[in-house]
Length: 92
Image (cartoon, rainbow, N blue to C red):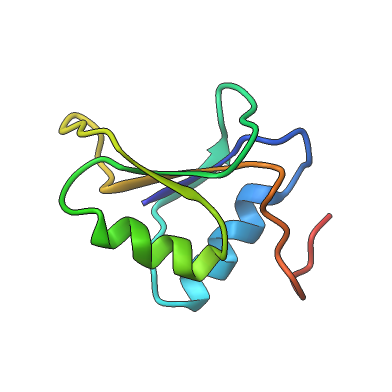
């Protein structure tokens, strides 16, 4: 999966990646989203929405969207919004 920062706050994607990896979810890429979002989106690119529910449970936030895209090399894309505030994480 990939984790993208859709907020103006630096470090959100890194914090989200750490949180997900600690919960056993494989993150292969993190970085900045092309644009800001108003709330966290969990975009299921391949497979069932069960994977999206697993990610939402780990993050504690997020709206699951099914948007099949077989050209992407990830099963799930997460675009973190301002509602993502990792409790207890080092967060710049």
